[in-house]
View 1 (cartoon, rainbow, N blue to C red):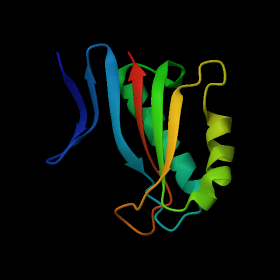
View 2: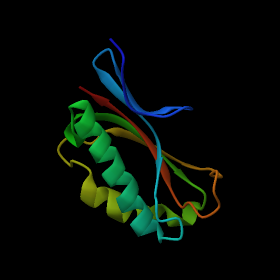
View 3: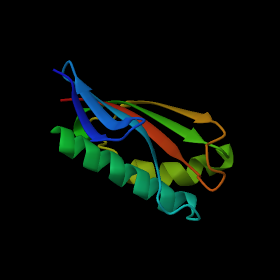
View 4: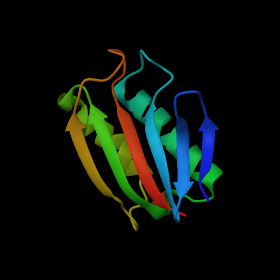
Length: 114
């Protein structure tokens, strides 16, 4: 059975299927925020979606990070490293990429086991 969370007309924010939950690209609501503020907001959204699907960050399998400015890498990692479950870290990739809104400093997707 496929479960969709926070469905919209274009996409769902998360989809659970086959024992996994797939989190769509999450961005901050504070568009003019620093990389640290935006990273905290994105991680909070991911954590909330994981909880809504019935799992948590200790069951993350993979995280993809998109930064329009790779120079934000260290600052983003400062927030991410404090958030991630150090005993159960997921696979992760970080790519420099242009985002849909020029005020966005970070976007993340995630996959977790249920």
